[in-house]
Image 1 (tube, one colour):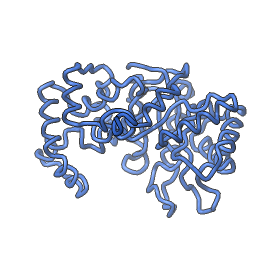
Image 2 (cartoon, rainbow, N blue to C red):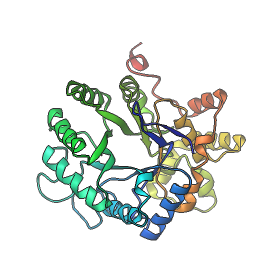
Image 3 (cartoon, rainbow, N blue to C red):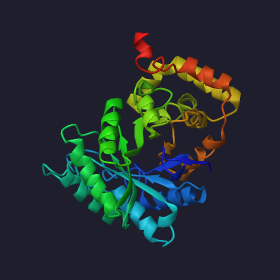
Image 4 (cartoon, rainbow, N blue to C red):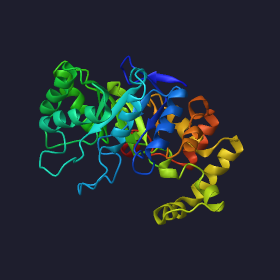
Length: 329
């Protein structure tokens, strides 16, 4: 397994992240344990979860919230040495109870949410505590005060963000710097060959501040995983997936042909394309089964030629560069 620094920090993480959003909802505990065993044996050291994972992510508060963290906690508790081999990442923001202060990024909620995550994960510290979404109703001074307190108490080590706009990243980082804090170590964004909007402003902001990018949905919810071949082979697809396939069919046909010509699996090519970007620290693999997980392990060692990268840009064109050059010059 290859490793890279988490942004500008000294922490090294595997270039494939084990995403655990399916744990407890689509993947039962036994299968989740098997996936974590496999990940650990493969050298993957960054496990990503969220307090809300494990059930329907809805403020209706159906049973299931926190289950992913609980499953990870029970896996860690099986072996005393596991915790020290894992860079454990979770998130805060989503509503976890019905009260008015049981969500978002107030200092009140951050403190209580962190304590609850620590309990579910059966650990005394979280290595990367990520803000799941931006909260523009809470001042950054309050958010950073809460995070600083958790760092001081040894309950978290690094702070990350997720789903932030470029100007949110800049605002957050400048406020942190004014407090002599490290600020953000990483950002999780939607980024794949079919979704390249972050190239306009998010990626330039991350590069400027030395913040690592961890793309989620790297294979486009399955679109980049050889969807045409799978459907032709009899795989059932949801109505939404069929609509996307119909919309993108010419590009998908060209993409899967290119992958076939390369002799590589489409999912591996999609992940490898992301890992060629120097701003990208690691890409998330969110498997439902061990077999799905194993399919993603080749990507860090797959090197794509300049010709292949250019061809991928032709098939899946981005926004035209970075802002404002992409649209104003």
